Image 1 (cartoon, rainbow, N blue to C red):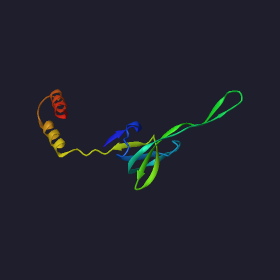
Image 2 (cartoon, rainbow, N blue to C red):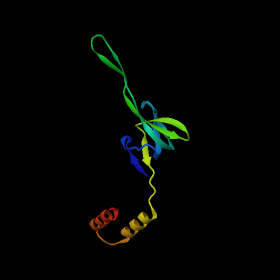
Image 3 (cartoon, helix red, strand yellow):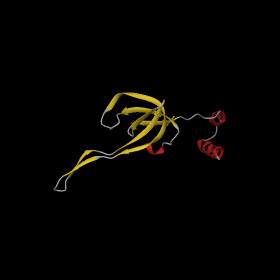
Image 4 (cartoon, helix red, strand yellow):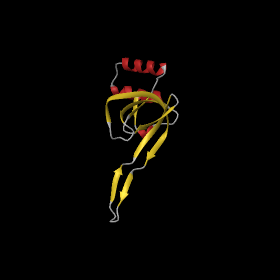
Length: 120
């Protein structure tokens, strides 16, 4: 699995989400929770401020970005501070070619060139 940042999530794709933070990013859980869900969209929650007559603005709560996931029909807002993993299933051909390449007794630079050629 490949860890991803929030801005690289693609709507409609399925991801593994590891939850360590609550929705407001102010409580961290000691036990991590995980689930598989389909990414729907991003949700921006604007921060709250209070203005005084003197021009001073007090930040009451910061702005946060949540990822909205669909898990078994339930819509779940997930904090951006949590970890997201893309599920990657390689093809049999990819596994066989990598196995063959690792068995070859050539220098690493040559292996890198062969991998680059095989991807094209």
